[in-house]
Length: 347
Image 1 (spheres, helix red, strand yellow):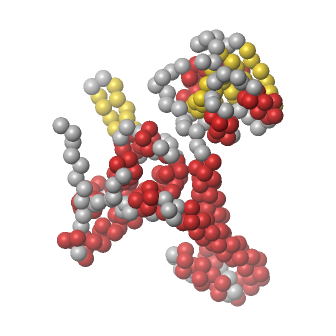
Image 2 (cartoon, rainbow, N blue to C red; image 1 turned 135 degrees about the vertical axis):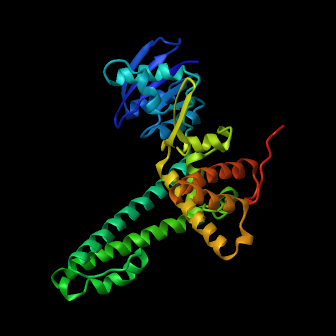
Image 3 (spheres, rainbow, N blue to C red; image 1 turned 90 degrees about the horizontal axis):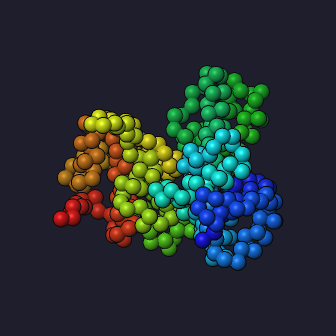
């Protein structure tokens, strides 16, 4: 099968055709419309090799709809194969060399719904950061004026309208109300995103099952399903956890083995949601231990013991790692979450 490597850009696309492994027979430099026609003119099935960036998923879906195969490679795995200077031509050659390596797993082409779901999460995160910036701006100005403000975000937003009307800030009151209006706008935008997520996943059985896992809510469940796509491509929950950067970084040589902090590779947003969710699950387990210890599940009991052994922050990351594996098991084996589940090793 002919293999074509494409270096994607905004308007110019470098193409390298390879019929025999390790040999480039033709090179082209095309604009957007010419590249679209070039894909459609391929009479026989072709393997398209691209870096997983920018518009790669769009072009991948287009090629797949015409019966071609698509291999998206992570740019980090392509970089070692590039020789000398970084040019579009050398990038195509590096992709062809990397595509020959069977140990490099390609990035699956995302569907349009997956991308739109991730974009919805990105919009919400952007608005949340903008809201946080405005709140911190108001907090700093109030603090410099000697005005005390509530610590929690919700309480601060409720009291902010009265706080900015204090005599100490009379000359800035009109402008500060504009900042408050922006904060309220971002709050409404975030609520709209969350409402749309609920509507999208109202009948999604997978998201509903993941939502039942301790520390996993609608945001985390929907973001995880959009990022992973098909969990079957991971042989175990540990592989999914390593893909998300939740497993320890290893420095080993010979008989010496050293494990460090988590690798922090993969999807930063999903990993952040998982760790925040595990913090909430830890607090819930500690409250349950203090009030009704007889109702603790096996998972909660393990979490409380881990906190006592290594501290809250490390225990939160350890619990997040375990939650990822639980989500993989719930997703792949299509069973409900049970905090007292005991897995049995195969004989």
